[in-house]
Length: 606
Image (cartoon, rainbow, N blue to C red):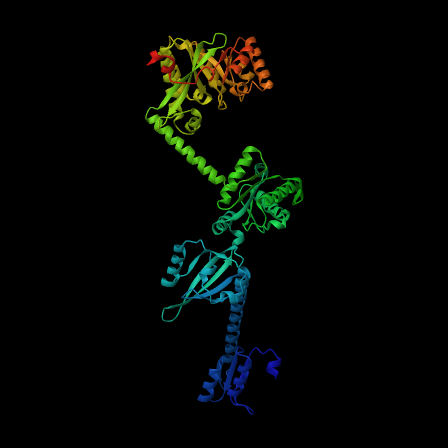
């Protein structure tokens, strides 16, 4: 009774006692408590009683008379053993509380899991034990990955350490830093495997987590958000402060996200980007989803969000994508937003469209490469007619490509591709050589298009001056049409080039005047001989009085400066009559002639 009512740390007993023998006494103690240490003191050794007592796990046996020092040593040994047991128990409790522990047998069947495993995974023990461990691993891991682990722990009987991905009961991913120890019996055979894992999901970068989520969920809704002013924030704060700011802002975004969207997690990506993602169960129709998320964006952009002690008014731009390749689509949408200054975009199928565009560009590049190799980059010429006499006074040299099917391809289908590669200079070189050679087949002027890229390329400039030297007696019949399809990066080179070609008697025309960079400031800088009025003004001049007024203004200015004017895209007689009445000097367009090979206009050029 006293033993049951009190906390006893040690029992010292004799085998020979008045009311009960020592063996029976020990048996009664062990029926109540298996752990309390017992020391037997006895004046004699009874083998039977001794054997019985040993069977009940006594910790010591001392003969009478008892040596005090020996007894104290024995008690000290028991105390030390108890301390070790307590320490092991504490280790066990700490490990159970902080780590995931499980066991599997040689067949991969789960035989044990601790409470932490259940808490992290969301499964009950009854749902786990008896199941194959592979059911709870991340499905998209390479089969070779698990084969190599099994080879190490089962056949090499070595410890394996590494990062594993598992699925919760709800299907979410979580990450474990895992150690797997094979348990080997005295015969050297592996009986089971014990696994100890530390959850590390919080320290795995969100980009990695998002990537793994997308591998598992092909059909999803992804909402990508970017802080519009992030570049300025990054340069205004330290990296640590910027990181903290993003973490706080992410919490605010999650807090403001409408609950009906069911986005229960947010991924903090790089450069002020945040991703909301979930499986696409079509909880709302796409139009309604877009409306809700637009409203969320507007709320964020009009709210002052407290970050630390400072109220920030941060604006966000958003890209929404559905289905496969959602992240790639959303990122492309975000890039488009930042380039176009939009705020919200639905980016589904952007990747597919970009792939189609890339394939189209690739086909055009192949076509261009083959045309250059087979000398099928050719020059066409279009007449420029004096409006008063309707006589051809000039020709514009235009580049064309002849494809494998003998189709004539206009430059809008290949010139931009050429600029992206190494072939643009070769095209310019071909046009220059063809145009100068044509001088000998006519006695009127030839207009050659040169872009800012051409003029700033020393190879094209050098070749142009070599051709001027070669055809010096005819150089005065060359007109350079300055095509400003690219922004000039070196004004000095351009001005110097114009000054040098004028020394040869070459004239200058400003092309596409009235659009882009072709403005009155350019005229002042380059002092051209001709202004070519952009086709967008001429094409609609019949119905658009505003275009008529602009053309009239250009003509009035040009005449004051003694500059001749040329109207492009003169498509019919009515347009011709209008521009002639407005005082335009020359016309170019289908009303007079399409572009063609020189032999079509001058048979003697054959």
